[in-house]
Amino acid sequence: MKEYTGMYIIRPTLEESAIKAIITDIANLFAVKGGKVLEVNEWGIKELAYEIEDFKKGYYVKFKAEATSEAVDEFDRVCNIKEDIIRHILIKE
Image 1 (cartoon, rainbow, N blue to C red):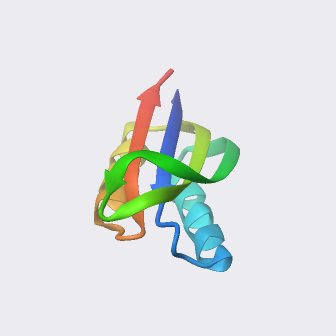
Image 2 (image 1 turned 60 degrees about the horizontal axis):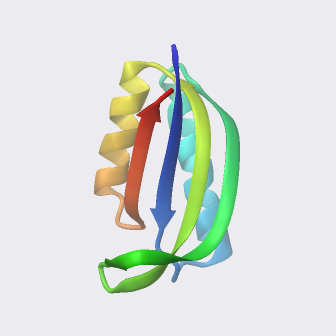
Image 3 (image 1 turned 90 degrees about the vertical axis):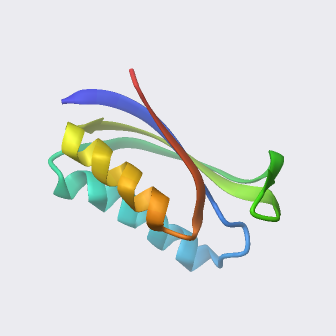
């Protein structure tokens, strides 16, 4: 397994419980695919550098994870289809 640093931005219009559910779902996604999330750092609502889908702000979540290639592919797939995540990135350490 390799170490990754990732970030995703959640729509700022969601309630706190929905945001926590997304964070938990992403962590579980790595666990199911044989990896694990080592650290989660919630930055909260911040201004976006540019407008995305008519949003000027977003809820930022940064994390570190150990993951297999299957977990990385699944993270990318889920973030692309989940409407509540407006941007995501995952970088190998």
